[in-house]
Length: 163
Image (cartoon, rainbow, N blue to C red; front, side):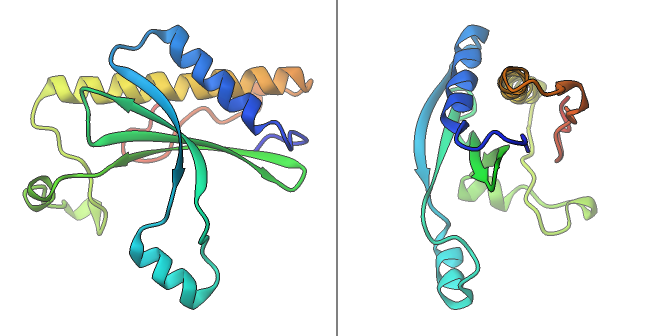
């Protein structure tokens, strides 16, 4: 959350794209997309009236070596503030889902399983690179607003926990 940064989301996303391009990460591309909730969420939202029904705009980051894995970056106004987030999304094929059994730690969440160290390295490098590009863009915006970036938590949540 960046205080007092309402209306600066497009600027932040442009900076993220700029930093990704400067990183020259191999096989990585960016695209602005409209994301919709899945059908089950849309049905439930029509019943509950609490979930978002409208699509949201994200910066989608793709890696040709990890076709089923995308990173979605969003900067949205939240009152007078700007909420910034990114999500790693993996859409496994049916066979991958069937043969990737959850461990007790996974509970009900599907966690991508890599079958080799090369894929694991690629995934870690890709996610870490994009994470750092988002952080640099947040830092640039906060500095332009005269805010202290040193207090920002730089560690991601989730199974990779990049920092």
